[in-house]
Figure 1 (tube, helix red, strand yellow):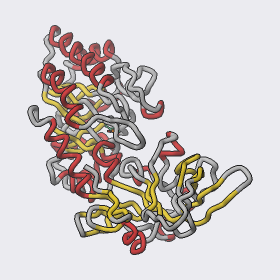
Figure 2: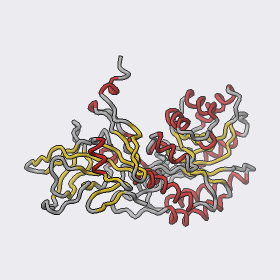
Figure 3: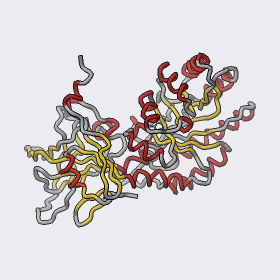
Figure 4: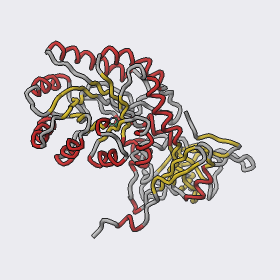
Amino acid sequence: MHEFKYIHKQLYCEKLKVAGLAEKFGTPLYVYSYDTLVGHFLKLKEAFKSIKPLICYSVKANSNLAILRALVNQGAGLDIVSGGELFRARRAGCPANRIVYASVGKTDYEIKEAIKSGIFFFNVESFPELKNIQHIARRLKRRVNVALRINPDVEPKTHKYITTGKLTNKFGIDFQSAKRIILLARGFSHVKISGLHIHIGSQITTPEPFVAAITRIIRFILVLKKEGIALEYLNIGGGLGIIYDRETPQTAARFAARILPLLKKSGLKIIMEPGRFIAGNAGILVTKVLYVKNTPKKKFIIVDAGMNDLIRPALYDAYHNIVPLQRTENRKQEAEKADIVGPICESGDFLAKERIVPNLEEGDYLAVMGAGAYGFSMASNYNSRRRPQEVLVNKDKVSVIRKRESYKDLIRNEL
Ligand SMILES: *Cc1c(COP(=O)(O)O)cnc(C)c1O
């Protein structure tokens, strides 16, 4: 499922030439493929159809309303991590009973809004948080569903900033404390602990960490059963990796083949929260070469997209494939090593380091591949740069789903 491909040496998104979009809308520009986005969701749904899980797309991966709507219309629920994401989820028309809410730091205001909108689950990350939710729910005279987020202490073998299931991470609750909390919470009048939640990290490319975590969870479910506690839901979180470079990540089908038997064994209804797997390869960031700068030590390709537009390389040392929109042969393809850098005043402002690139010239367009997840959603206005425009392509139609910001937008809230 990849709707970005070359036809006659031109990069296309579905049926449209990406260079045409760059000319029409300017750069930097995020371009998303509707088919790829929805296709990934449907593949996952198909792979797990024997257990009919609730698939809650993780909003923070790419939170544009049009992206959310496209998925919600296909039956997706949404996984949110803030009041702002709750607002987006509701605006996107997501039924409240398909919204699950995780975060180690939910404020009273956020909890209140989520209870009032009647979300499906709070994924609770500590005992103080549980007590607070009980307190607020009682005031609102509502009973709420809670899944305890368990920290299963497994090593997901991914970047340390996106590892979340080790006991040294701030997320979730260890098994022993979880058991104590579940027993205590039987006396709570307005929260019902009816599920367990895990989310062990992101960009995980092998099934083993998932298998390890779910195996531990199943053991824990049995321990609870012996105490007379029956749960209804298991939320296995997100974290499925995608191809950025030469990884061989799991397809939905291979992932399902490994974990379906375990999920069935749990005896619980399943929720999952994929983000990157759905949106990652559905988007690219298009940028234009401004200058080619040769120094005695290095060659720099200076482009008009910076770390404010796509922070993953700077933040995680992430690899993104970068390709020209137009492949040429008449130009000498003397491939050379260069750093592809943005205009921002930071040495961390790079999209690629020591990358073999064809001989590029000023005005050439490049596509940063795999930028659909944690791309725009992490964009900022650093250096007073306007955040880029986003467009969504569906076959031969393109819609602007977010306008480029204006200079006025930059100072809108300043007094
Ligand atoms: C970020 C996040 C996800 C999604 O992670 P991906 O790696 O994008 O699939 C799912 N669940 C929770 C709780 C998260 O914080």
